[in-house]
Length: 165
Image 1 (spheres, rainbow, N blue to C red):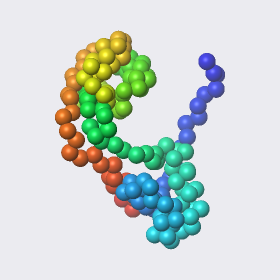
Image 2: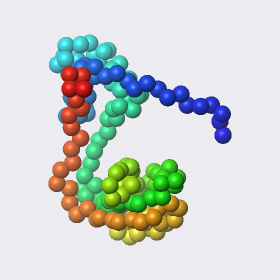
Image 3: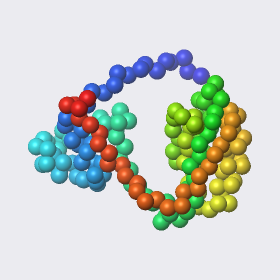
C-alpha cells in the first residue's frame, strides 16, 4: 500500500463559457469544436482546452447513450439496497467491480444505495444476483424493480450558470 496521501483538490471554478460549452455538448456530444467556437465567438483552441480541462477534472464525460432494450440487453433492473453504514464503502467497491452494474448511487430515504444492472437475459440477471450481489457482506436487504420500457432518457439538464449560483 502506498504511503502517498491524495491531496484534496479545490473545486474547479466554472465560468459562463464553461457552462455554455457544456450545454452545447449535452445537446449533441458530437458537436465539433469549430461549431462551438463559432457559436460562442471564441477560438477552437479555447474550446478544445476548456473541454479537455472539464474532462480531466471529471466534470464532463462525452459518451454515446443507448437504449438497452434496442441493443440486445432487454433485462434492466433497478435495485434499492439497505446497507450497514460501516460497510458502505466495501459494498460500493464490490458493486462497481461487477461488469453488469451500470450505475451505483448513494441516497437518502428508504434505501442507502440505488444500483442499475443491465443484462442480456433474466437468466444472466439471476447469475449476477446470485454470484455477484448476494455474497457481498454488508447488504442488509434488497428490493428490485424490473424496468419494462424506457419512456425518457435525458442528459441535457440545465447545468446552471455563474449568475444563478
